[in-house]
Length: 153
Image (cartoon, rainbow, N blue to C red; front, side):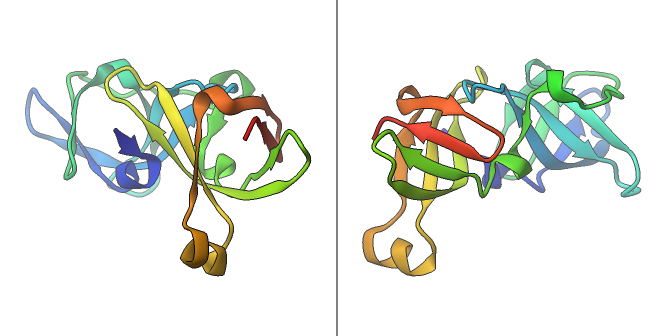
């Protein structure tokens, strides 16, 4: 299992020649938060942004991501591409009874399927110290909106 924040900043290496293509700057999830679809790669020149579909990834380690593709895709990221992890982070999470649980702090997903298994929800610094972060399973997600996620918790 991997967390979104563990993947951010990892270098992307092409297996064929060992070339460092850049580093992961974001993840893109399906709109229903079922799975991670792709990784956004910021090139080494800090100007070019490309997308690496998750099926192109051979291995995802704690120090680097190895891909087997010759070229990363120049994709215009729009609504049809899904939700950016950077935008999901900080989204309010409310239970079906109307009580706020906190805000999304991270996603937990499996590799290579990309299946999102849980959301890590934070109540803030003090709340995290007192009671820890909530882990909300993917099955508990009822509705995903632009600024609120409703869960059965």
